[in-house]
Length: 106
Image (cartoon, rainbow, N blue to C red):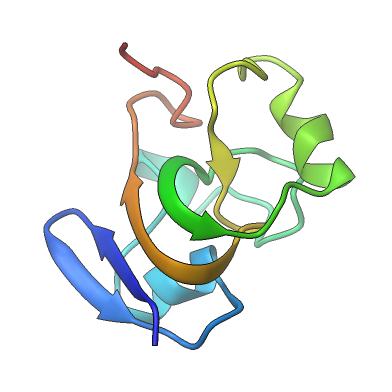
């Protein structure tokens, strides 16, 4: 079973699980602040679940690329939408600052 590492915690999930669902099931959130309540519920529309992911995950689909190509996101940031990312192996997830998690500091 793959392991998701997030905010100092490790949680196991089935291979192919949607990252957003894994986090929510573990009482974690891929959102910052009020975005936890004000989001599209996994439809790749709002972009508030953008996270940095290292590890084995699914390829981006067009709906995810489309949302991440619009402000406030930057398509070069390397972020992924947790609601569209499937966990295929062990991953480490990091949430950045900003309402959408878009403030990537490099």
